[in-house]
Image (tube, rainbow over all chains, first blue to last red; front, side, top):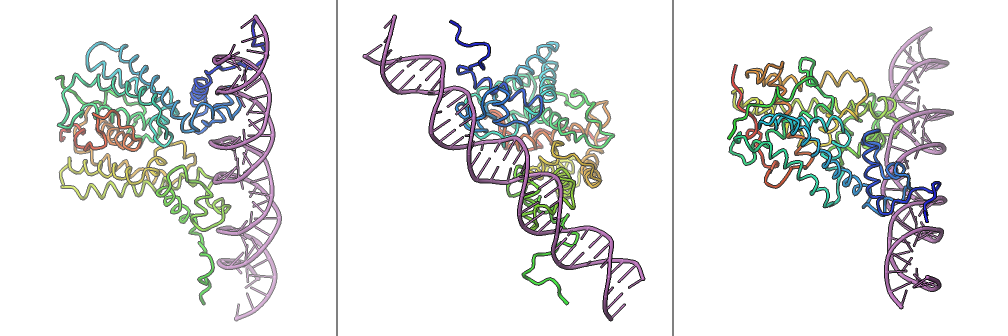
Length: 197
Length: 197
DNA sequence: TGTACATCAGTGAACGCGCGTTCACTGATGTAC
DNA sequence: TGTACATCAGTGAACGCGCGTTCACTGATGTAC
């Protein structure tokens, strides 16, 4: 009673949406953000180029869905590196930041997509649902420390801007003058002292 | 003896290179990075779309030249805001950072172009010549302070990653959860204390 | 001062490319009866 | 159990678009003599 002969192309049976997001992640990893298009994702998923229209609101819809999946991987990466670190608040925070930087380094196209609003225009419930935990794990790692100023969330903001800026500068390959060898900097060299609450 | 009648199109007389860079800056300001192309710059400069080939090595060459000009404006903006600040080392540093953030906010497309190597592939002597002073004024403002770690240039790296990260996050409009209102943060709220040498 | 010539910036038509979108269609699936 | 029908995901051809690049050309400029 097998209906799918080996020679027939695989039927996605509603799973094409997921397959297209997977295809997008593959394209980002292989050829970067500029290679990402509806047609390229369809081709990589083994489907005609008109098929994605049944699952996404145009290219912005697909990009938003890919970015939403990116936040899942992003959060997992940070949690992994946090749990691999010794169990002190500072080590946990450094682990989170190490995961942040590792994700940016290992997934440059995806990282750029996730943090550039130009590529996303569609209200996608998965986007907010998946991105909030990323910020939550960072905030959680900052919680044991005293605020660095009176501004609410000042510690989170300081750490977040710092690690995000290093991630962006490493990606941009604008590493500044030779004496400022940003490529070899350890995050711990530039993270200020933080006092425990 | 006037040769150019008012009805004739302006002859650039070797100044077309500059006019095309100006056109690129206009396009970036008006329509953003995605609207920047050889043809668009040529049209804005009032010239046929094949003309830029006589002055630039393709699109990467033009983008590199535009970015190089951007660094001049960038440096001027930082110096302006530094000199407008009271003359203490910390105020000068905060002025530099204020200029950094103001430039990014006022020129989002240009800022992205300048700090994304994907758009630049050509060795352009102006690029290095113009970008080095930008880093120099930042380093100069950091010089009065003690290093924050043993790593060489640690203070510059800490300040640079911090201000750059805030600039990128403000641009990305990924401002995190509501309680972390990054849009309203003052840079002084997250810049750590720095000790004078 | 005038003539002949070389240079070269800019023109406009043409090319092929990949893109997002549309549209009539097909064919498998699920459902009502 | 079987039949008729509605649904709808995916197809493949076609469309127009803007892009970078090429290429023979033109016409103003500068120079040699």
